[in-house]
Length: 326
Image (cartoon, one colour):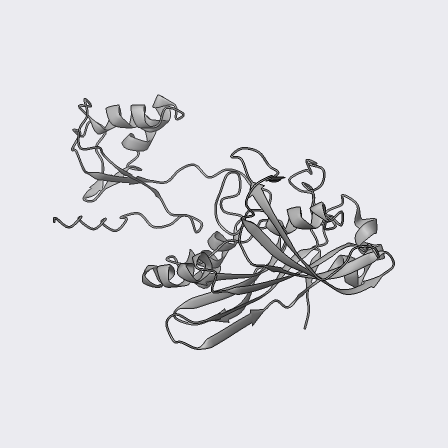
């Protein structure tokens, strides 16, 4: 059995913490030049822009910049940087809880995506940490919703990523969350919520449907005052928006949720009332060292600590809802 050739390293450095795009030319095709293929491969890009990239030496192969008239070579690799979108800066820092030669564990603020996706590219925890720590090969071991604050873990080198990703895929990580939501004296807690969740591509909200449950969450009330409850949430599965949907289905939706129970459309620069959900801790046995590990967020949820101030913020930017403490 023939071994696949390893992918050559990129000849281009990252730009603002973002890797260049990598393309491999198909083994078969009717194209005479690299330009011909790029015009077909990238139909959303104007031909004039592709020409400008080639003429400016911005498209690279393994041997350097690709000549504008370079012939098509099946199996060859190309690299180039895509145009980065303008993004509203998220005005909160990513705190590093732990760092060694293998792991970086961060305390992510609300509103900052974990990894590049859609309109959030450079304003992500991954891109920021790569730049700030000088770790261009940093990769996520898992992901945390953009609107959720708290503990998220990255691997420093690619060769370790699979081992730590496997922890999450095999459900060998105990994840504990904290949330602030309305208090319902008639709601019997603690309880385990089980349901089947469907998340359709292109649709913001997930929904529960009849059928065999594929999502399980433990919900506990740890305190209440002034009509609010403080909850400990332990997801036993990892479906998209699972905790937010389960809390909404119990008729105690998490404060600041722009999706459950009703989808709203806050402005990109509206940092006023963040989702009151915090990934409090991660606990697992390290797959490399065999040591027991536990990482805990230093943040607190402002709707619980100072609800009057949180409620008064409205839509005004300038107050992250999970404040660093200690």
